Length: 52
Image (cartoon, rainbow, N blue to C red; front, side, top):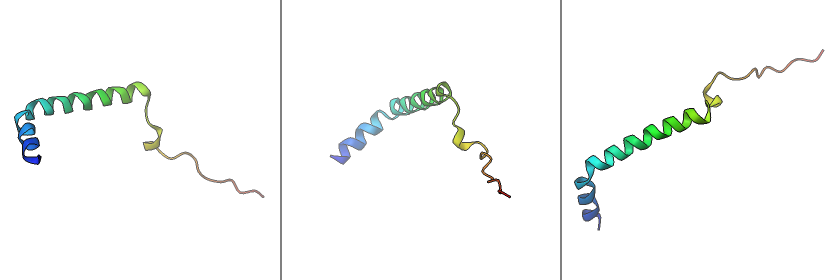
């Protein structure tokens, strides 16, 4: 079972590589279309004000 699977992967190696690259590019474009992710930006002002 695994030998035939590996043989199919080796046979279609170039097609798999092209598909993976296209999917990655589409994910990047989709990420920009949905807007930037704020979790990687600088942290919000988390300082708590002291009450006097």
